[in-house]
View 1 (cartoon, rainbow over the protein chains, first blue to last red):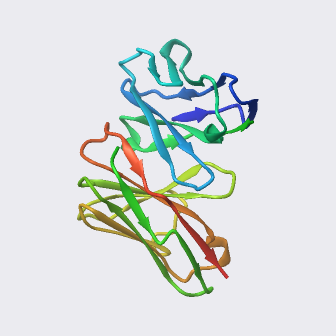
View 2 (cartoon, rainbow over the protein chains, first blue to last red):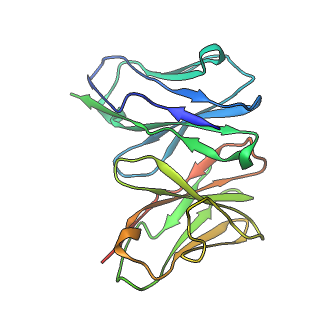
Length: 115
Length: 116
């Protein structure tokens, strides 16, 4: 079975602080894909990143960075120097190559960035 | 990134009536589209997967006769909630994928359905 766990329900930080959102996944697939999406209060889901299981290279994009570690089945997301506009719900998602390639979402982490 | 558009963004309907939500991929051909449902402060729950030109595959527990999904073209899928009841009130989100299963899926803006 596939599962995505985002243990942090809510995180509150002050602007300019760094914050890391945790994501732990479970899958028996040898090939799978991991995603992060942002859902601001307006509701739409914004795609942030996709990572393939065979590519453990970490990535930095502006203030965002992702740490993918297969050994611990984790795909954590760090926002550096957080801003108020980063306030949203962040979802980690997993898609494996079995089970019809369904995308399974974690419960989400609600991030509050206070000015 | 690719653009997926949903319409309407908000709809209020009376109990017992049907309502249709459209999902369009604007700048790519969506071979596969997905419909999700999201309750307040909860995660996304996959309702069904539809491939262009074929019948949708519904997740366990989702009533296919109540949630009719049509994917008649490579750019349009529709979700029709039939005989809507207040418990069907929710946020419905579609997503679309171009090409193979490893490709990224992009989401529409979502549709808020309120059944009164």
